[in-house]
Length: 288
Image (tube, rainbow, N blue to C red):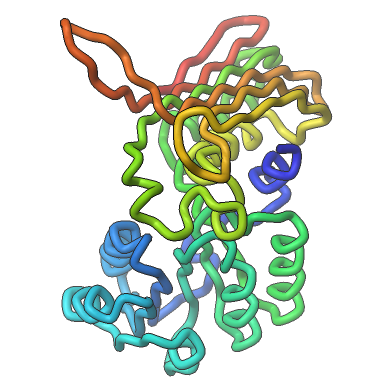
């Protein structure tokens, strides 16, 4: 689990502004059928940026790739190598299974393409470091999609901490209580697997909360954590708790529960909640 906290740390690149990639005239999206919804969302976001257009789309599901190209533009590809050879292109946005990120990112970087990677950057720190070095060697930008950093309330809290508005931070509390039906994993060949997902809910969904937490509190010096698989039939974890201590002395408590059900009004319903709280010597702040 310490490796996961490294993967979510501020040591890895996050694109804070698409303009950092230059003035792109072409954008592409690499994806598999497992990420089709995310692909559509990001394609729409790309098209909303002036002077950006989708040049090509790669995927293993020919029908879905063709459909997305008809909606958003771009040439469809079923082979990743052919997709990278499409010209002109300025950068790639990759949303494939996490265990393929470094392989595909390196292939793109070696062609001189900037890379915007879906989280996590990869499933191991060794692979992540290899991708970062390759991007540096080929003088291309590399970013990871941690969009929670752009939320107004989180950016405001970041500024308050940096300016000392709330005093010295002492304690942070982060909780991710999300429900996933068995079909979420059962209908996927890679979700929850160690080889392609790198684990379970912690490295997939809760990594957003970990990223924000570490972005706000700084590098972690000590980790005490336990993880288990108690709800789902997967290789990775669906329950985790951790206590973190930052280099600055800030303590944090993290809790992840993948199958959170609450009794309410005489029935049962799933609860999908993500909460973060900070306490300092002069006050507190809560984000939900």
